[in-house]
Length: 393
Picture 1 (cartoon, rainbow, N blue to C red):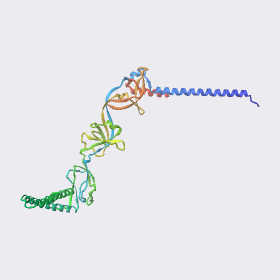
Picture 2: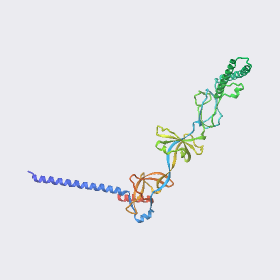
Picture 3: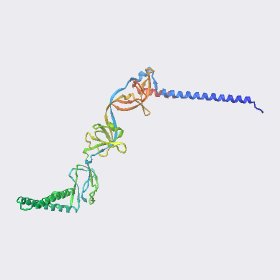
Picture 4: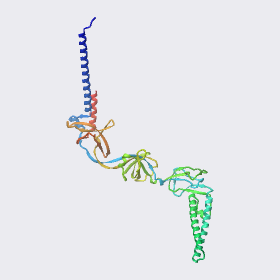
């Protein structure tokens, strides 16, 4: 059976034309779908009310309010104490602990005996002190005698110089021994009366609370061992870590509002007192703040969350009710030029909030002086989303 060449060619041409027609149709449909989707996306943020809906929603419009809102810087930190209010106590000459009744948390007063230690090495120091004191008494008498003789030209000047030198040497030696006796904790008043002892008292150099106890009876402590730690909590301060980009906003004297982790319901006040000039490895700067009022419920190393008030600055602001939050973003409604009851939902950035007003940061491409919906914004959001759901069905 032979085929007709003309008929075959005709069929090929017809098939090609049909394919091109179908492709063009499909392309046109896709273009219509894309345009429809783009148009729907544009319309998604557009809402128009009837006159009745406009009255029911209680819509009020207006422009920006220029308000002075206080800027703030958020920071974390701890309750800290000055170095002079935290004392580590040791036995300068070492010894065996013979007495101590301290427990962590106990209050102690400055000069109070914290422990009694025993060390035989205390005895030679006291002996040297008493012997040197006796020699000094003789040297003073000899110096006076040589001085009197020199006035009568009875002795040579050299003898007076030797006496003067001996006197100065013994005075220096006695002063050094006296300091060693005092540092060891030996009772100097008893020693002056001739009483030599092998025990010494370790006394508190400040008033405060005992936070560390590292001793027990009979334990030998070396001069480098920390026996006790005492904290004076009467002068606590707040030590904050502020990110380097926020430091230019922080100034001395600014008010700090803070809460501690173990009592978040209570707010305390402080003021910026010192700003460190070094950036730490974590890109923060230490800011030292003094408490406005002493709070004895605060404890050293309490974790702190703080807000530093950096001062009032004029900003473009809207009432809080003019800003709606939806799906994690913030929006305002702007009146369209198309009509009195036509509005567009516009995404914005929020800044400082204070006293019912919030700073509004408009998109970079926005121009002019828009009229915002100041009241009824949530009614418009509800109307807009309900319309979308109806279109979806």
